[in-house]
Image 1 (cartoon, rainbow over the protein chains, first blue to last red):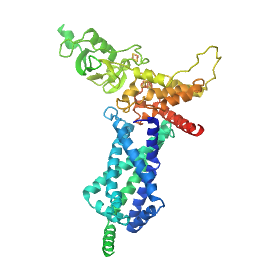
Image 2: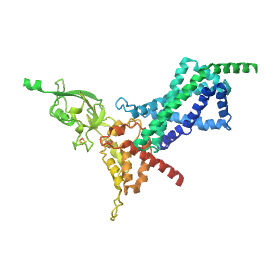
Image 3: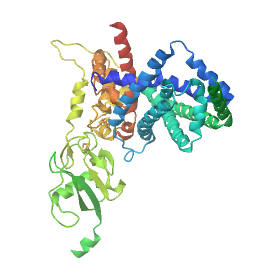
Image 4: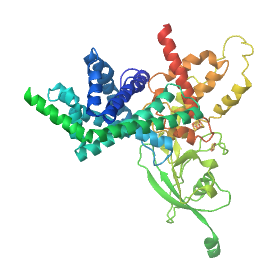
Length: 223
Length: 254
Ligand code: SF4
Ligand code: FES
């Protein structure tokens, strides 16, 4: 890596929380609206987002570029780390190892997920009104469901544990007590976020999303 | 003679050896006569006196380094049963047998258990881990240090640059330029000193460059491994805070 790695590493750490962490929370909530209010509420959330002004630039600057930087630089960081949990099997060292493993899994998962959804929209194969139907289709494929489950859990762990590390790396939590408390808080965040995602995954499997997709299909044929 | 041979209890050692810096490592096994209260150094001395392997064949004596023999110089650090630690304070009675010994290979191996810890001393120079008071006239007494501060700073001053924390760190390796935990803690020590504080920014700047503090990945193995019980992760987080402040101050005031 050229330039001063202090700045590139700090940027990587910052982008992981702002904006990516915030987007991750937003994404969890949008999905959860599928569980809370079915297809109608989910489509409303999706529209709420996509109706934002300058949506293309917002997406580009707040999502695409940060993901690209955080992901590619993160792969480099994972490559420069040893995994020595067999010699030092301490909890924090396991978290260190999982942070890197889950980061790689998440990056692959995000690319795949983008391919299935966002790229198809860009190619004109999918409209934003069909997100619910598309997710219904994916979630009812057992292999995809398992892969999504792994991807979502990896992403959620990476986010929660990354938040803990962010607090240390910027000097916010300094002493052992503060770091212990923050690690508990981050584990609670992990559980809550994982539950939100899993509930929405289950919701997408429901028949209401199937009929929504059928209705959309007929509508499109008619027009 | 037969009776001494049968009565003698032995301790099995499996030692990773290496003849030259660029030679391939190999292991040799030794059975050392047991004596009460012996430690790893006295076992190595026994091999030095009688370099015969467990299978009865002769070999060259195993080479190691040691000085103080009381866990204050750091010279005898090696990997004992998988954990980096000082051989002089590693009591045979407290170790699981067979005892496996290897050099701390995070550092360049010179021969057998002797390693070159040069990078640690270079790191101390890089972060200016001293207090500059040399000059052409008497500067007079420096400012006093608060007792509460002296107490925690004293703990940091116990570092013996032994290298155990670097060996334990997953981010200190030949793919990364991370300086390692010990020098970061020394920056905190010298920046805490009322006179040393006058050069605090220079030390922080040295850690805000390639291979500086950003190399820490928070595995926290260092604090679990330090034989002196130095609160390394607290030092790292405290210097994270200081470098963050320095970063914004530099951006906003220049
Ligand atoms: S901080 Fe502890 S483990 Fe690291 S070099 Fe100093 S004494 Fe050794
Ligand atoms: S000989 Fe000095 S620490 Fe062991």
